[in-house]
Image 1 (tube, one colour):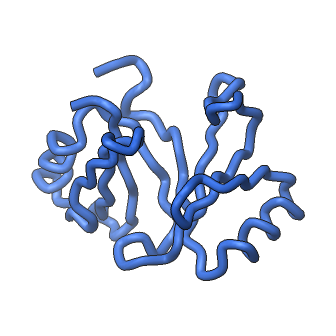
Image 2: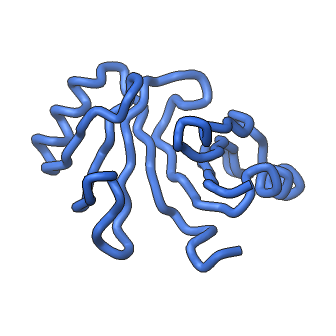
Length: 130
């Protein structure tokens, strides 16, 4: 495990109206919400470089996504070394897989998944590794 894994490092907010959500967070919190590609937008809460990488240690950015089954509530995203390995641990500990591992590495993205903890909270995890 790297020194950055198992930390909350991203969030996702589901939206029914991308423009409305983008305008709201820009107005209320001054977040930058540029197009991400597809139907998503970034939610920059902290300064980033031209590639969207954070410039402040400990800061967290996220994105807005269209509301969908399994992605119907805000998600706290946890960086892990291996999504499949962590999903097995989730199930052994009494959690459930809500959205199985999705591999977006061919698009420059991560492998990610959504799970439910023992209290019914939905959480996400992602990895740029194996």
